[in-house]
Image (cartoon, rainbow, N blue to C red; front, side, top):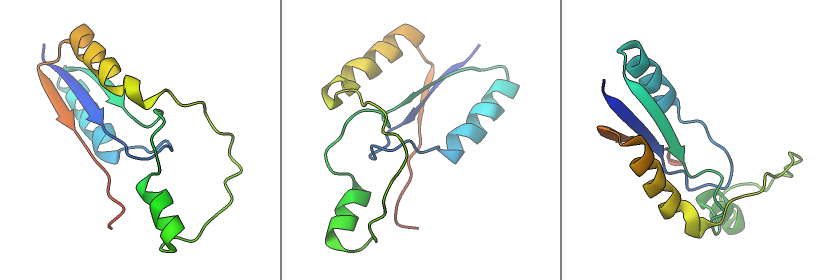
Length: 102
């Protein structure tokens, strides 16, 4: 059985859903693949692209009343990803990304 690890390297500190991964993951499961998922949304990063654009005036600042989730330290992303790869041992690593450009 083929094992696929989906990777979403989110540059934001906010949770974002990758539509491509949800579609591809469902398709892979229908084809009897085993899937796993690793994303970087909840690792603390420095200023994100959206924050930089707010500071520069490109984006309008908004008040976010949602409860902030505690973020994992940025330095642990690579070790956590390597651990996921070693534990899951995927045949394929599929990467998806979002852009603020559209």
